[in-house]
Image (cartoon, rainbow, N blue to C red):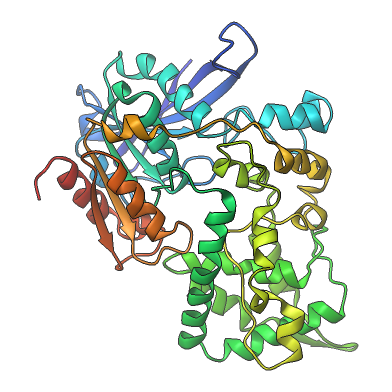
Length: 433
């Protein structure tokens, strides 16, 4: 039963759907999807076209908006919006350390998680579309990984799409995970250099924290083993519009003087554990590299292996000299499954996914080359999370796709830029500019 309620300026309706776990076995096991319908209060009774929002990730539920902030207000001028919690996330049937043991052991868990990539998400969308729209195609807005899903949608079920809008989410059609991370580490290093140029006092602060973690065993209040590599991974913040400032504020009061000497403060540790823990989005860690699997080659902890090709990221070597410590970015490493209590029980499951050699293709280059769906994509000039060159290569491979390449925003431009970003993409897709 759907439940509707109100927030400032909007009417919200909770929607729940049942879909097959494996769409190739429609009479088999099912899972539940949750989505939140949003419509402007003054248009609640109107027959409006639908916009489906696909969140970034993988592993994150859709944004929990209050009212109509960011891009949502602009979307509600023209559409009813469906904020989908992709399978395994948010209020949809969960996949985490508490629920995955219901599948059986690590082998059964890993096999289950192969159904949580873009191909299954697209088939979920097509399964629920007739119930939501009455069969009419809808507009899809895909942010980051949601854009990856949108390209998969264009590859497999373009008949379900009226328009496709992508923000920071044009994937390479054929890159292996190694190619993705080989391109990523130099971008990450540029973002770190830009951070230190803005906040030069953070060079010494970061080195001091890293040195402390190399010489002390620190366990955060939630049981997270806080290693120097974990500290470096906080650089993931540098890909967002406010990330550099947030990292600076985190570093500025890291230590407190105690009877036993200087220690990492409780306040710093509390903030760090909130940023490091995957308790709220374990799928991000579990299937992150699997989103790049498309052939018989295993991903095999690609980010960890490729990092070895960039020795400047080695904290111990950095601290032996006088270079600034380099943070890392959107990378998943096997040590995370040792450090994080939310991931520790899933270490063997993650290993099996990393070893897998039967990944199926997610994109259809021939179909994309013949695309007839209006598509517009925002490509951020030096996006830390998604390689610009890879994105532009894919843009050229999708017939009719129009790009807006900008250095005005970071990867979260659809949030930071709000209505202006969505307005620009809609105008491009409608051939109004």
